Image 1 (cartoon, each protein chain N blue to C red):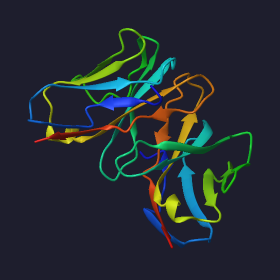
Image 2: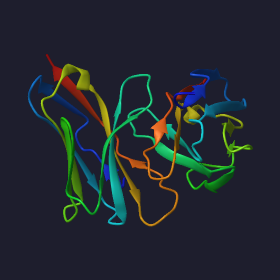
Image 3: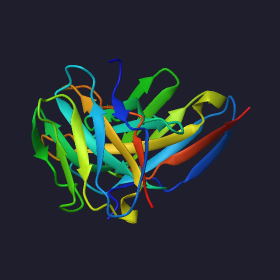
Image 4: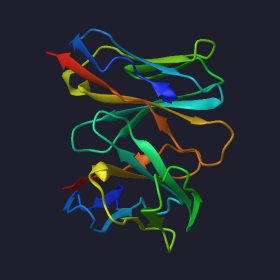
Length: 114
Length: 112
């Protein structure tokens, strides 16, 4: 049972335009959400996060939106740059445990075309 | 070191053999995690250490998998009687309280 879902395996965007990556989750006990970026042959790198008490968090070109009622979050990148081309993973944690282990989605491959 | 270091970066082993994968976390990080990423999937949680103890090993797939962290720093993931289905990238991450997890580059394990 996939608790965190990224239904778009890939996304192609023109440089300078907005990239929108989507993520859905099923467990209402998740209280913290993160986006990681991964280049080939490297480990995932933290990008941005959001707590369930917020509905938006912004960091430079990156904004994450959380819709708790819909159990949906999205990552907006604007303007998109060729260096943003990577696999983006959505992850969730929480449900009261002390582990803080992350539950990852399957990832979306973003290709930013020059 | 500056980041999480994992060795080896690649490991090819024969079915049935024993392997050890090593993780050097960021100095001072008390929490350490092992994840496994299979092709086309996101990382899947295996085990979590807080200090020397395995606080949550609920993600280990079976008793062929074992991990230790005897001094609360370096951790070793051990896989006995490897099977072809164990082929994956094994990722290690470390963190401090109230910070994000930092991942190593992973060990790509191939069982032939």
